[in-house]
Image (tube, rainbow, N blue to C red; front, side, top):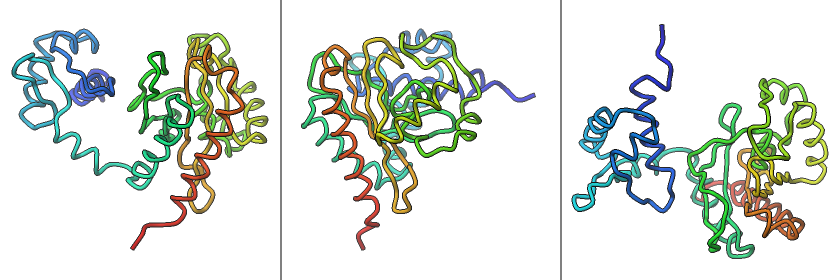
Length: 257
């Protein structure tokens, strides 16, 4: 019988690495704090951290004894995924942050989830959370719905096999029928909007990024506190659409030889 991914060795290692990567300011975490966050015994996590450090995947600050992601992991990450999307996306996201003052993210479709691969932070003290390396449900996130904006209704039903209860924001969509109806409207608008859906107090707008064939390959998202951004919804939506089209154009040009 196969081990559950959460209890297997690989699953535990992945949980530790994700925990260290959750804070995009690259702060350190103690072994005890990592154990607390992943819900494991401290001695077990300590042995795992030593093994990961031996392979350069994590490193320990000799003065504070705290752990952070190692350079070897950064080298491996640099070779992962679509590097043209990552490289070009970084510049576009920075331009969005400079224009709007809000956080900008780039996400891709991973199974039945939206997976964030890039984020540029807002300069504001109060800002949207850091989701790089995290997934979010398709039905309650602007990025998620932007990623499936072109999907047929039957394909959407197949993806959204579960209808989670109200464990998200107060305005979360409650059924597949609601998601499909919203997508029909958002398809006409060319962007998606989620206000207090994924979580209370969070507003996000997103637009699809397309390859040379017109296929959606990513979603560009602008996010911020609802209290600060609600009156700027039209502006943020327009910015997201323009930025997504710009990134699509860059990617459609093909590699420079």
